[in-house]
Length: 194
Image (cartoon, rainbow, N blue to C red):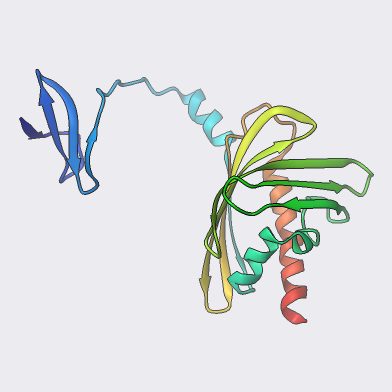
């Protein structure tokens, strides 16, 4: 028996057997569903969720090909990666394909070295790049980075998201990424003026 479920989006039909929902039909086709269990909302959970996510949207005066290359080419990433304005990349290894690994080591101006590494999850050239994010100095703390690019004329909009940061990391990601993207912007300006 199919019926419209009062809390379902329009166009979704729920099929019941013995009074229990078993499947739903929508524009995406037929799929199994499971009973919905309501969980009380807790303010602290929302604060944790918000604190574990960094979102940055930025417009670059550079074509999308240059911005993509800045994220996927070892020579390019060496020109901007790392949050210290006077720091520099020591080593960058990147196998930019789904399932491929990356590892980047950089040194701050005070001599402190950092190594981040991860696995590429999405590689859609000129559009989307996503990967896991880990620090060698923080074993077992994994987060997730997503970079979405869209081109308009000769500029590129980048929507950056670093998720699942949690409290296990000592890094201030919002400050770090904003500083890093200032370096990226300068590197892109140098590329487009040459």
